[in-house]
Length: 320
Image 1 (cartoon, one colour):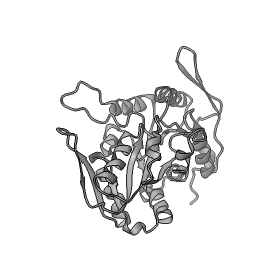
Image 2: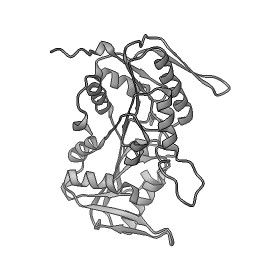
Image 3: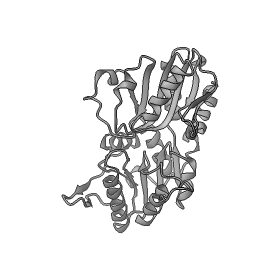
Image 4: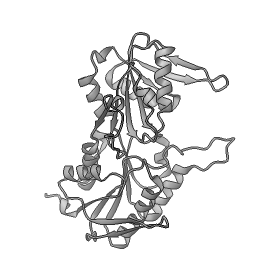
């Protein structure tokens, strides 16, 4: 029996955050990016006007986070409601980097919000039927949603790059820069059949303890997000100075890079920093010491395959 859903029922839209990634995703899905006008008025308010008909269609809106997070989030919420009012059959928010994902808990001694829970509620109230994201900061964030959430991963891309580009990768050690990334590093180490190390910071004396042997080893340091790069820079310093590591490769899914610490990239022990294009960045103006060590790999095939499988009602477990 022929599947009654075709790519004519699929509409892929792009927000303002990452149009290049959206075009790559649409190309993978065999469709063109549909037309919608996003505006930002001088008083800071956002607006959206959908140019293509979405009535009875499965709509996928690609809007990542990173820089200008609040405006991109507001534009996404307005777009979702506009699609709902225009009669879309199903609306999927494709958020390669989920905004406010780091606000997934509240410390007992702090008077702070749980921002990720608020984002989940806002997306649902706006009218989203599903969310697709990549390497979410904490697995428990999925529990904030009452709609389906597909948490994809760029780990397969990192695995392939490591096997093709890291010499004698079988002798390497996978490391997490802090306790929060233990699970992430553990999964990569298990898939590559490599030992694992962990950097632990004692809060009472600010000392760093490395659990695991990295002496004279090449270390694969993995994290989900790099913003100021302070954690990564500190991790590289500790691995080399305290642990005696020979060299370090960094793998990061979301390269926000609000600060580009040249001192990190100038370290001779740092061989390469591998990131994905979930966050739109222009590295052409960066110093040569940065561009020489920065590698960007394309994640559009992973997201595009998830969209295709969702559209045709197929399982996405194989790519998660």
